[in-house]
Length: 553
Image 1 (cartoon, rainbow, N blue to C red):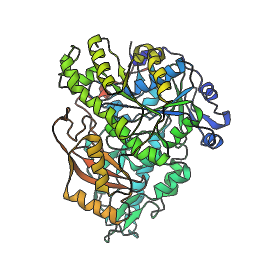
Image 2: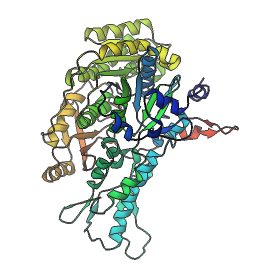
Image 3: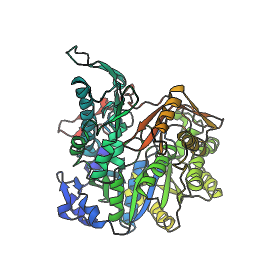
Image 4: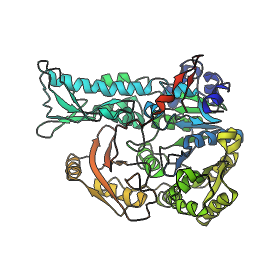
C-alpha cells in the first residue's frame, strides 16, 4: 500500500480537538477546513513565561538517491513518544512545490509516519509560500517601477531577484523590460526558487511581526554608482510586504496519522538557504509540548550546521538531543556500492560508508557538544550481520543505535528510539558554535569548511574576494555565514562521496542577505533555482476518475 492510500485510509481528528490537546484556545485558532489551522501569535504571548519542553533535532547523513527518510523518522519519533505516554509535538518545514513536482517528491513523511492532510500540505497548504512569493515579487515590481518613474534613489545596479516556487532552470538568468515602451529600462534579471528567497529566510528567522517588518526594511535591493546600498525601506516597500505576510506569519497546525500535533511553518532548503522551520513555530512548540521534534534539511553538514550556528544562535535555544538518521543501504552507497547491488550484504561497503556517518556524529558530539543517537531506518533486506556490525562500530565511539520501523508500524515501530530519547534528554547538553561572530567572514567560512566538512582549506574567486571586502567595509562582517553547497557530499562536488582524499571548498560568489542577517557563500556549481530532472515527478501526478490526487509520494 502506498503513502496516499495509507493516508486516505486513516480517519483524522478535527483540528480543533488537536488544538485542545496542546492547550491552544479556540480564539487563538483560525481553521482552514476540518484538518488545518493557523495558531495566532497571541498563544505564544500567553504562554511565553511557561517553561520550555525538550528540543530534539532530527538530522541525517549526506542524502543519497535512495532516500533516508529523515522526515518519516521525525514523525515516527513523535508518534513513538506519544505511544509511550509522553506529550510530543512536531515542528517541521513546509514542502516546496519544486521537489513535489521535481525529483524528490513530497515532504510529509511516508508509510504510517505521515503528517496529514498529506496532499494539502504538499501542495498549496494555507498559502504561506504563495504569500512569500508575492511579497518577493512585489518588491521587484516596486524597484522597476521606481526606476521607470525617474530613479530618484539612483539605482545603478539591482541585486534583488524575482522568485517562483517551482524548478525552472530557464529562469536562472533573464532579460526584462524588452517591450520598448518609453522610460522602461531593460536589464538582466533572474529568478530564485521561492524557498531560497531572502523573504523566506526572514520569515523563518523573525521573532514577531515587528521584527519581520524591520528585517524586510533592511533588505538591500541594489546600489548607486557610489556603491551606496538601497534598501526596501528606502523604497517604502516594507509596510506593503509585511501586510502580505501578516497571516502567513501565524504557524500552521496539522496532525500525524496517529493524531500527534504538528506545527508546520516555513520551508527554506538547506543546500541553498538555512534549512530550518520558523523560529516562531519552534518557540511556540516549546511552550505547547513536553518534547518538540524538529528537523533540519539534508545532511548534518548543511541543515544541522545552519540550525545550530544560525537559528539556535538567533533564537537562543539549543537541542537537548540530536538524532542522526541513516540507512544501511545509504551507508553502503557512500561506501562505493552500486545502486543495483545495494540490497546485497556487504560488510566491506558498509565499513567504508560508515566513515560518512561517523564524521557527522563526531561533528555533533565533539564539535558542537551535543547528545547524539543514531537511528537506522530498517529495511527488510538489512541483515543481522550488518546491523550488528554497525551497532558495534558505534559502540566503539560511545554512540547508541536504535532500529526504527515507523514507516511500516507507525509509532509502535519507534518506541525504542522514543524511550532512548527520553533518557538522552535527561543528560546535560551544551552547544559550542563552529565559529564566533567576531571572526572575519573568511575565517567563519574556513571554520565551517575545515571543522564540519573536513576540507583542508577554502579557495575564492576574485569576485567573491571583492564582495567579502565590500561587505566587511559596509559593517556586516559580524553576521553568521550560510554556505550554499551540494547536499550529496561533504565536499562541494556531488560526485565525490567518500571524501577520503584531501579536498578544498571553492567559493564562487558571496551574497549579503542584510534582512535575513547572514552572508551566503555560493560554492561549487550549486544553483539557487533548481531544474527538473529528465523524468519529473509531475509526469506521474494526476486526478483519478473519482477526483482524488494520485502520484504524490
